[in-house]
Amino acid sequence: MTDTPDPGSLRDQYDHLAGLIDSGNQADARRDAGEFGEAVVDGFIEAVDGGHHLDQHTPESKPQGIDAMYLSDTDDRVHVAEDKTIAWGDYHAPYMSRTVDGRQNDDNWVADRSRDTQLDIEPDQIGHGDDQVGKEVFQVDVPSDTLARYGVEPDGSLESNAPDEIYSLSDVIDAVDGWNGVETDEASADTAQDDAEAGESAGEQASG
Image (cartoon, rainbow, N blue to C red; front, side, top):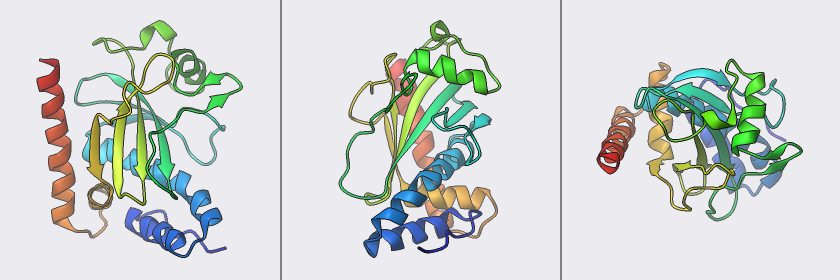
């Protein structure tokens, strides 16, 4: 078993995880993938997407809770996010697990889990309305070097197996590390920011 690198640099974590994958160490790769994926999504929300965290899952948090809750600068709404990470194997659409309290990210599950956060959400407060809480799932795919964002139905299933947005994972990592003051590839960081702005523009056009 190898040591996990300093969590201050996403690039170091990515390189460490890629090394485990390349060496065939599936057990350690899967062990480290979850925390890496959460770190990527948390960083993306603030550094690339311009969001503001209201609540974040940490290694010390209760299991099977909400991964992230944030206020979006794009639509001025609160969003609840789950993240999934592929460390091994081929691409597949993210799947919400079934827990003792129902399916991850369905409206009732989100309302129940919100009791452990700063907000107390009711199921009828979740949806696409301007004054409602949004839901989404992010998938960090290490072998494919992508970060994808999907919309979520009231029952926790995906709105579509095709992501709403997709980014280069390497570019996102550089953008987050740069935002955190880590020396990085400025061109990649700029590309991730441009991709985020393009995604916002496309969303505005679709809803207009």
